[in-house]
Image 1 (cartoon, rainbow, N blue to C red):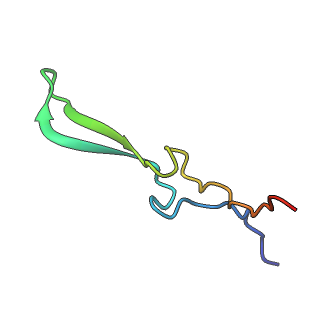
Image 2: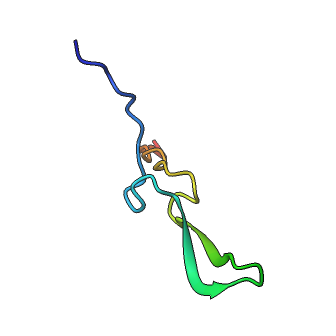
Image 3: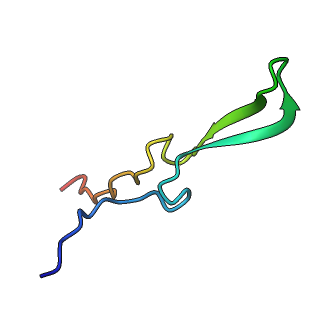
Length: 60
């Protein structure tokens, strides 16, 4: 019998990989690589999409 997977909304811009480490090509004095940590600006590093906006009615 098939298992049901949870229906989580994944960010369409980063595909759920919200944070990436990018190497700059330089090394620190101890030999480790210098990296930059970059987060997805759309989901702000959560990896999930914002809830869909709902329509609201104003006035009469």
